[in-house]
Length: 192
Image (cartoon, rainbow, N blue to C red; front, side, top):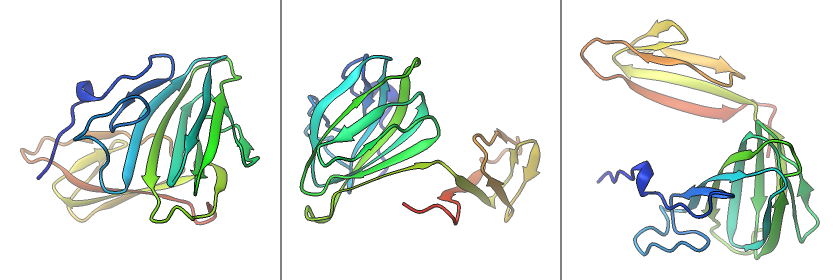
């Protein structure tokens, strides 16, 4: 069964910080909307300049944040600190528990996408890492056609992109919907 969750059904928490949430999170609780497998949160966040994320707890989770615009200075009670900026990915492993906070010291709003995953064991070691997004993107067409960056690809074709920020895709009107498999993975040099 496929369940569609329209954008307007997402919960709006605080227009000055968390734009909207896909699952129960923070002060929002939806009994039928707690998690999806190990995915516990998927939030679209925004922090205005000079605003902060007050100190809050995390435990038994892996939190992955992708900064889309701006930057934020973050720290947690175990001494880990960082200031991820546009195009950077931050990964926090909360283990048995941390206290975490952030402050937008920049001149523009921070916009980010953040996913939280339950860890299989709470005893996983607390960790922090931050990397520049350095992705390789592969598009495989099992059927029909698609125009990628002005080039038509068809059944069995693959398009590969090194370090692109955006990949323009346009439909080819052949009467059949395009089917594609999109894979995004780090360059071989990148490790978390």
